[in-house]
Figure (tube, rainbow, N blue to C red):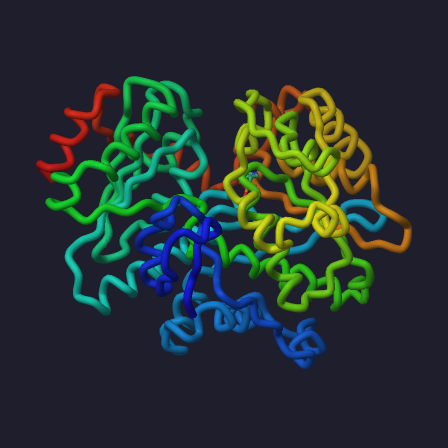
Length: 433
Ligand SMILES: *Cc1c(COP(=O)(O)O)cnc(C)c1O
């Protein structure tokens, strides 16, 4: 299958090129030329199928023309060695828990899939080692580092701002060793991102080594996020609760929700979607006014959604042929302040015992505020609450149990390379590797 750019100023490319390049030449986002509808029989039987079985069928629709079936099956089964269960929370509201992977957040699914697909292309072509550069303010770095850990032919450099990520987050990408190098930059997240950008534009560096990004806009990270929408539906079907399904998605760069919109295009019977935002409500403003005006992000307690210019907005526009009306028909928006997020966490915990993280709390509250009696609502619980320990503990005034996986990271020994925020030392360091 070919991939075209949302900016339409450059030629279509193969899957392999789209995965290796990440972003199109004209700075647009890659879109698959076709979104295939899955057969009715699939939806009839879906309640009886496993997460891996369902995901393999979805993966074949996107990647089946470009990757041999046995290889693709192995990539899917290897990526999804953990579950994403649907848990009843209250009334007709369900939590789709996406935090059972190695770094306890939904980004594990896309990062692991991308690592394996890129690893396959490198092995097939017998290419020289590929170097993945990733700038992180916390969570992306851990998902990418753990996703790519031990994949032959790939080395990952994680750049992060010194002293500006939480200890738990830092441990998740500085203790791994092997093909993962953590680089601590004496600067901000924006400095880290600028260094990565400069590296991609530096001719000498690109001649010396093969560089690529594992950005969330990469199709190999983005498309696999459709898998768990199908599996969530399957679990509801099994409970005979699959009528009028509403997905509420805590959104920042809008990759996660856009993957859900793709699932709907493939025939998944979803009634509507909700984009749940923190105070960074650019998308909600667009729904209300028809005008998209990005602005600098505001810091909130749901910090993985502090995005002022959601990169996947271009994909949503493309999907709905720029029709504001069509978008409003399928997606509604909600925005919550930090106080409202804390209130949601506290109230649900005190009334039902279910503990939300600050991101999932936005998704939950949006359902609480808008779900109709005949609807079944599923919010995406995008991270484990223990990842935001201080915020959550200060909200419920109780200690939160830290899962074994996080405890293991905490015991690891931190190893990092310290560099200033200027480009020349960073370039010299890469050239010496
Ligand atoms: C990245 C992230 C989000 C936002 O997902 P998008 O695909 O960028 O909209 C939400 N919650 C958590 C915990 C995240 O890490």
